[in-house]
Image (cartoon, rainbow, N blue to C red; front, side, top):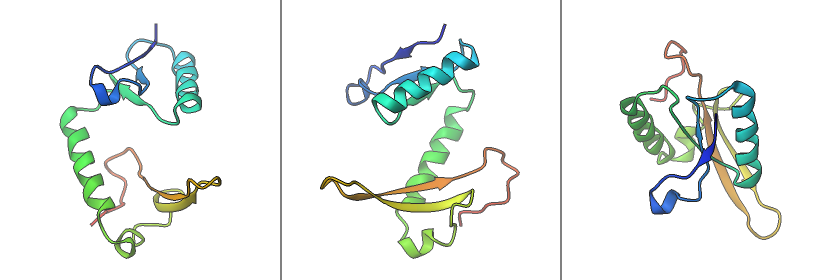
Length: 113
């Protein structure tokens, strides 16, 4: 059975968490859609990726997104992989969202440095 749960950390208590270890693909897909519709984001647990790799990826992501825009654009455009940036908001809540699309295989040749 797959269920949406909440993390015990106070600042994350309202973020949907999807457990990938105990469900069928269709049920997980439904939960992903529900989380996206209700919150726009979610956390995943029991995904099989080591905590060490997750922490390294987070550190690299913080480092990458702290770079000047001109440096980040050298990785882009996101077509289909790379760096992208879009203006968002229509009702006074205007801003920008940046993203970096990467392949999940370590052998993929993209370099962030």
